[in-house]
Image (cartoon, rainbow, N blue to C red; front, side):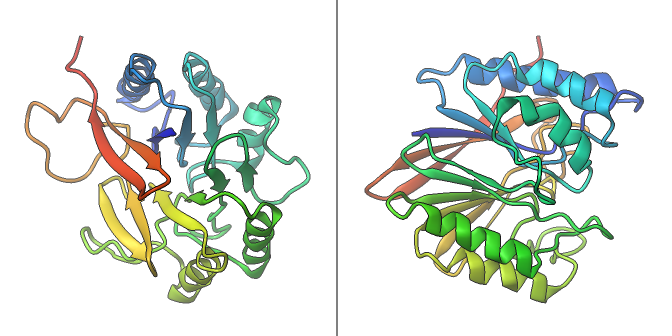
Length: 254
C-alpha cells in the first residue's frame, strides 16, 4: 500500500501569492498522477485553505478532483469545519452530525484514522475527553488491521522553530498520546501544521511531520534549486516492518 500525504496548501484567492499556492497544489497532484505505481490514496492533513471561505474550498476541490487516487481530508486550524464539511460531504466519509471531523477508512490493508485536533480558541491543537473516547471507539470498531493515524497538529514537541509545543497545553497533547497508544495497533502518525519536516515518536509509534505544500510559506533550509519546488511525502507499507517514508520533490518549474 502507498499513501501520499499532502498538507498545508493554504489555498487563498486574495493573497499576493494566491496563484503560486494554487500552482503548487496543481503540480503536486500532477506529480502524484504520474507515479508508477500510483499511490492507493491521498490524505490531506489540514490547512486546506487559508481563510475557511467556501470559494477557497471550491477552488481547492477543483484541483483535487484531478487526482487519480481517492483523496481524504481533515481540518487544520485555518479551516472552517462547516465549510469544509459542505465542500467534501458529497464524497461520503464525513459525518454531518458530528461536532468534529474525525473518521476511519476501511478500504485498504491499513485502516486510516483521521483525527480532529482543532481548538475553538487558538491556532494550537486540542484533544478533549470526547475526542479521546471517539478515537478509542474508532480503534475498537475493527481490530484486525494496523492503524495509520493522521492529525493536523503533531503529537510531539518539534524542537526546531520558535516554539516546540503545538497544542494549547501539554496535558491536551498527552491525552492524545495516551489514546494513540491504547490499542497497540497504531503503526504510524502523520501530521502537518509546522510547515517544516520533523520526526518524533509517540511511545514506540513513529511520528512524521511533512513540510507545507505552499512553497511561499515553507520553513527550513532548502537548496536554491528546490525552493520553488513543492515537496510531499509518500509512505509505503509493508506488513513485515511497517511504513517507509520518501520525501518526493516535484519536478522543476515548467
